[in-house]
Image (tube, rainbow, N blue to C red; front, side, top):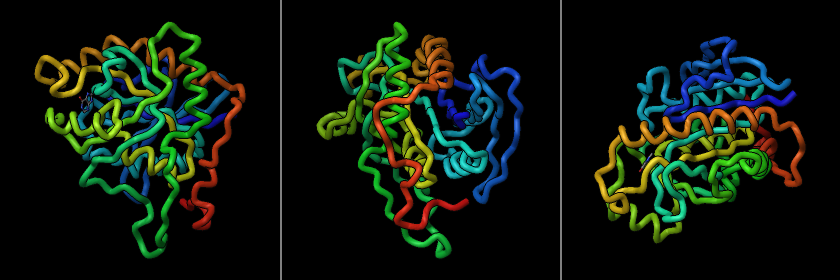
Length: 265
Ligand code: HPA
């Protein structure tokens, strides 16, 4: 039995496939996390909606540590996270799905580690590849079996938000090699790595980024474009949960903290 966590971003609040799941508030040292727990395709599945019920928590206020801790304490070993993104890359257009393979962290105010107390000590985790290669391959294999237009790589730029970017920032991110811009993948992916949980992201392009888009950016545009992609994302989540075959790549996510004695709850 696989133990799968799904973190639903903007627009992905309660996938139909999860009907019959049981809601549970999980207490963590960082606060509470609301989890929906159930079973699908013979696997344990825990679903968390990142922005909370009714999309009330902005990206810089999401309790990323509570969410990842809760998933770890429920035994989750794989996390599939969805995110809405703007695109800097003319090939990546609205409605396209992107399985990112790297990231640039431009967040400013977020607590981005579990290792910030004397008890835990100092730890520097390897983050060369921020997304688990095994899970990326599973998602790519699932996408290949659909008619969804997707890209099997992309560099995700994480900004602090909640404002959208300036045109000059977007120009800079493009010069640095960024493909997509969003507000949530960091520190989420990093905390999952510290917690020794495999993590991958599938981004949905909702708009061209600031200064590339001919119109001012709006949350309404993001939400409306996400609404058009929800059925596709739900299909992908269901396929990912049911994808129980092995893939030809390996990862070291489960032992990411071995040098520091392993991650302990
Ligand atoms: N910028 C940042 N986050 C986003 C965007 C964007 O253009 N679109 C969707 N999420």
